[in-house]
Image (cartoon, rainbow, N blue to C red; front, side, top):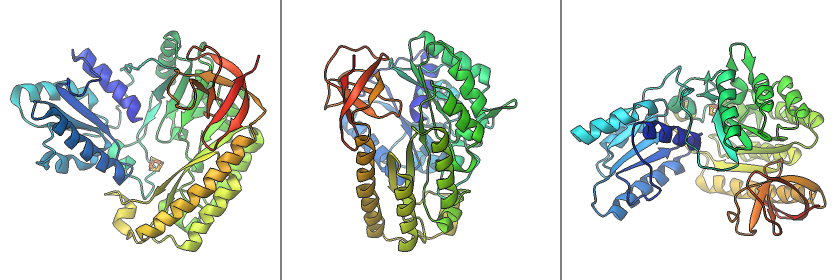
Length: 423
Ligand code: SF4
């Protein structure tokens, strides 16, 4: 979502007469678009700002923070003398950026706007994207779920959706510009609704756009994954058979404390239902270990569910306290750091084995690979992704980005596949 938002910011500022440079040392203004989901992300931003100041060696530069950190930490950020920030702008206020920057240039006063909107969807802004195969398209913004660990509802505000017509107009323009794949974005895409149309109807409409060969989306919430959406995914060949389905924990008491709205059993039942309709589905997930009060036995439930589901891949994180959240207010972060580390290591080892096993099952299969720009993956001159979004490197042939080729999978590691062109 932040990548997409940066593309929106680019359009807004280019329209206002600003130019972009990839050279941080040449820029008059540097903006960092930030994430607040984990504390670690904050530390990186502080480090980046100090590094920019150091590299500029006293040469004038305006530095600003955009995104979720801006909303959550406006006061602290603006008052931090060491950071010496010039502006702080939240995710719903990007249209105010030209005004804030002009005022700053004229009056040399810190500027900010972190107002959250119930309506802003940036439906009237066409993002400035870098050329490529995939284009991100935000279909909704904000979240009403208030999972107890999550800061997003506080930093990105309430749910609001763009109209189907507006999204389709953007996708048609993308197809005209040569993009072959779109990834529909939302904090919880299953909450998408606009004038009686839900996410399944939107997917069907996007699939009808000529020129777009693959459609992905992220992320759906397991608590409200409708049968209708499973059916549309199963029936439409353009919709990739890949779902990121955040589990977060496998224990029912912990899931309840997290406010997730499902039990471990219900999560597994959903996976079974999806697999029945789409046997080739690839599943990835997010897991938090060391949520406050999570016991060793309760962590074992997460291990058990992950073993049973066998995700293709998983993003695993240690719980970190996010200010303002229900968990921060009501629960003590009482799982010791070394225990959290031990749990993460254990899950990583297990998941690596599962990912390898899953990828090895693909060896010998001929798969459709959509090629991406060459030279980005160290182990292969050319690479693309299969329907499941797994990277496949190819050593032979000349390819153009967006081209779909067929390749036989000849080797598998936990995170990558190697293929040979299939005539
Ligand atoms: S669904 Fe839960 S975890 Fe996801 S953005 Fe909303 S509050 Fe956060």
